[in-house]
Structure formats: structure tokens, C-alpha cells
Length: 430
Ligand code: UDP
Image (cartoon, rainbow, N blue to C red; front, side, top):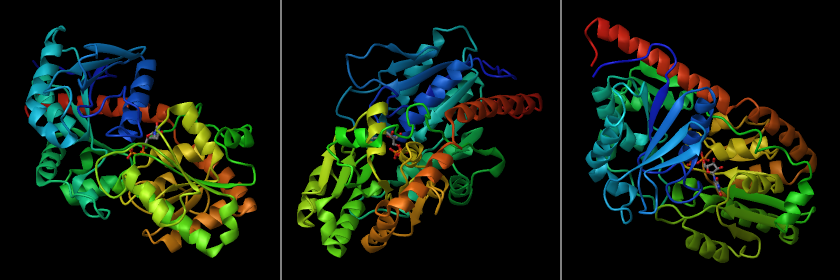
């Protein structure tokens, strides 16, 4: 069956194989990609496009179809046992998952979907086949790239296997359009994966400026977390894994306390998020590290939380640290800034786009605790400086919007469809 829709798509199949848009981000395999899929799907639906998100069923309690929002369905595809499979096991379930999606589609009239958008390489492998079968464009977002990740591993982190590298290379070669969040990621795709630059589109992700707003009453946000007005609060938010390097914030806090013993009375370090993967930075190892560094009295671990509650954490903090070794964008940095909290981030991947160095926060080269302590002190300890950075943070975050992301994605689906039609006329496309 061959068809395509030259104008705006009416229905889009989104593939998010390894993690569900219904999952709580900030723990396990759920993070920025889940937020991206949900936020863009909602906005596409608000523009009259029906979105169906296919994800692997991980529990027998899940209904085959769930409504995420008006116009957005989540389809749970049975592929392998519900439990017991980690992300690294999922390449064995690609065939079963694809078969499930094809069976779902066969219930509709022919030509139901106008585009396939796959997220992460596992979904890209599925999308590749769907694209060929349905004759619609495949738009792919990698979110992370194995070669980039392997080039800057944290201590104790396992390199991504060759099978993923090969799988990604295939998807890069096959996709009609490759969407990246930043120009840096686009350059990585071209130089490390040989992507055709004409097929790469850089579309910035957004931030929900209704949920992540500056605090009307910052002291109330702090009081709710037991932080006093005179305290200095520094936060890490995200999945607790070596790549995200929450340990760097702990080491920097220990350095600051060694430099300024009087700070111990009023320093609070918040670590918000759940375990993800294995390695040095698992929560238990972080608890042990805090003890070893002699700062367990200032560090507080909080479980992952949703939207409004997370916004309260950002508002309560004087500064948010994003010390990742590799980060394709870093939504946490944008969300914190939208709440008026400056960010100190590692100068890697998308973070130099997410943070305006010197205006909305600071970027740090490398992970030396001394350098991190310098930057955190500059942004978090000096009240006047903090106010200036805070205003810059709100201004910088306001440049990003999920509405614009969704509009740009819809435009990409449409232009990929038109290109496919042209190729088909010339006898070049499936
Ligand atoms: N997040 C959340 N609750 C938490 C911690 C994190 O909802 O307790 C969300 C956060 O709002 C952000 C996402 O998880 O949107 C993390 O995205 P980011 O791009 O920073 O990192 P990733 O997880 O994709 O590596």
C-alpha cells in the first residue's frame, strides 16, 4: 500500500518502544524523552492531528488502548514478557513489537497514518519497517547516540554495545528526516554517523511555561521542603545514574564546606530522582558518598515527582546543578530556569544551548569539584548575583516553547511527505 498526504498529516503513529509516555519521568528508563513525546503529542492533538503512541506493554493490568489526552491514544503492544526485560534485552523483541503494531494498523482502513515518528534507536528499527510497509515518511529522533555517549563515559559506566551503534547507523541511513534538539547533535549525526545533512532538522524542545513559573512566594516553596529563607539550597534533579553525575554536586558541596565551614549551618543539597541503570551513582552509593565526604547532614534525597511538585523544588533552590557527562539537551536545565532558578551545567552536548553562559547560569568545563564549587558559589551564594542570574534564567527559558516544537515537527512531517511524493513520481521511493 502506497500513500501519503501532501498537506498537514491527519494521523501520526509515534513509536516509543522502550518507555511509556504514561511513566513517571526521573527514574528508571523514563526521562526527557517521555516528556518530549507527551508534550509534543498533546500540542499536535490541539492542532487537530490524531496521535497514537505505541509502547511496549510492561504489565498485564494495562488496557490495550489508553487515552492520554484529547486526540492522543497510547497503544500497549505485547512484545515479550511484561516484566523482567531490561532495555538491553529489547532488541530481541523488535520483531514481536513490529508485528503487534502492524496488527493494530490492519484494523483500520488502508492509509490510516500519514507519518511515523520514532523515538530512540529501538523505535527507529520498528519505524523503518513501518515506513516501508505504509509508504509514509519516517521521522526519527535519536535522543541519545551511543558513539557520543561512549566518548565521554563516567567512571563505572558501561559502554554502549556495538549492536546499538550498528542499529543506530541503520536508522540514520534509512530515516526520511532526522530531528535533533541542537546544532551540536546535528553535527554529531553527520560526522559520527554519516547522516545526510539535507535530511537533518534541528528543532529545539520546549518547556511548559504554565507549570514551570517563577515563584510568587519563594519562601513558601522553601518552607514546604523545610528550607529556611536564610539557607542556601542547591539541587540536582533527574535520573540517578553515573552519566548524570550527581556525585559531582556532592563533591563540590564538600569542597565549599571545606572552604567555608560557616556554610554548614545553612547549606542544603537536594537530590531529586530515582535510580536508573547500575553503577557508581546509584542512590545507595550516593548516600555512602555523602557519608564518606562528611556531608550527610546537608544532603537530602527526595523521590521523583510530577510537574507542580517538581516546580516547587526548582523554586526552592538557589541554583540547580546539571553536571552530566553527556546530555543531548537537558530539559531539567530549562525547567529550572523557567522557575527563575539559575543553572550551573557541564559544557557538554545540548547544555550550552539550554543555558546562556553568564546570563542564565554558568557552564563548567570538566567535572573537577573545585571548578564546580567556584561556579556554584558564584551563582548560588552571592544574593545580588543570584537575582541577576534569576532574571536572565526566566528570559532565556521563555525562548523555548513546546508549541513551536510541535509546529516544527508537523511542518517536518509534511515536507518529508512531499519529498516522498516527488521521489515516488520519479520512481525512487518505496
Ligand atoms: N523529571 C520529573 N520528575 C522528577 C525528576 C525529573 O518529571 O522527579 C523530569 C523532568 O521534568 C525532565 C525530565 O524528567 O523533563 C528529565 O529530562 P532531561 O532532558 O533533563 O534528562 P533525561 O532524563 O532525558 O536524560
